[in-house]
Length: 390
Ligand SMILES: Nc1ncnc2c1ncn2[C@@H]1O[C@H](COP(=O)(O)OP(=O)(O)OP(=O)(O)O)[C@@H](O)[C@H]1O
Image 1 (tube, rainbow, N blue to C red):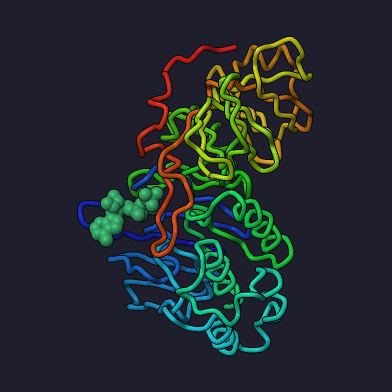
Image 2 (tube, helix red, strand yellow):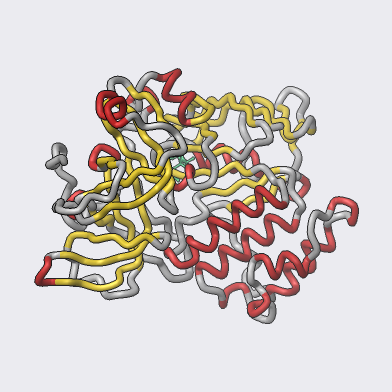
């Protein structure tokens, strides 16, 4: 449905990207600076390439040879981008009505009332857009994108400005948008775990180029290893809400997507605070059963979604309420006789979790981004390169 072959220079950075996307929702994955926001801006129409062609559903959005450039408002693309905001000071109700009225009746895929209910905007209608919290503003941005009755939804790190409470609401909501409204979504993130919560189709970007595309399994098969994809060691980044501290036991308790976690003690994080933690795929062990009599404090029950060969290892994708990636050796996988669809327990030592800085929910104004990729300093110091394994 989407074909894009463009070149664009931004300062010293050159994007030379050829990609295509079918009806399935797809994640755009890459490290910070890989070009994800640039790709999404080019499709949404906020950026203009120097050369190339972008076609959506047979409609040319950009063609440098033919001199075609469809402006953003006329593109059948609903976008939630990093620096987008609703008109400052506008009343939420007025802005939504104005957008709705612009969509021709036969193209409307849902009524305004339905959308207001879906996005829980009823209480906000008489507020002005600059009086909204970060989560409220993000819900409004998504509603505005959907109001266009788009053929394609483009979301640039939609969870980045949010805390876990709303994140947990937004993820199922985005799934509903895909399933019930059938709108394919292009979804940029530098968190593989976050993308896999919505789709297992990926486009991997590196330095402005597409390194590969397909399911995680296809990507690994074609590239042969995570390194070849520029992924490095696959990391799990989880948003957590601090529940409390057990100082004498040396741990902090937290929840993530309803999962209870035992984390390294951080008494300075007050209960209710939302932060991100990271655990490497290589630091998660798998067991077929819950294990009694073991020191490991986190045993998360889940179901295997995919077994992805990765050199001599297997990357096991497990749905525990959120997606976790566990890297185990091919031998361990064979000895456990793991199959897709089976139940396993993901085992993670308390000390294998690291807190990430800068991940607390920021307040307006600004769409400050959290930094789950780990560019920010570690609160606990760097994760050891060869941590103890079980
Ligand atoms: N306004 C700009 N002027 C010049 N260069 C820019 C501009 N915006 C982005 N770039 C450069 O383009 C490159 C790609 O940026 P882009 O925002 O697309 O990356 P990204 O993958 O979305 O990164 P992140 O995950 O940090 O948002 C970066 O190296 C950046 O330095």
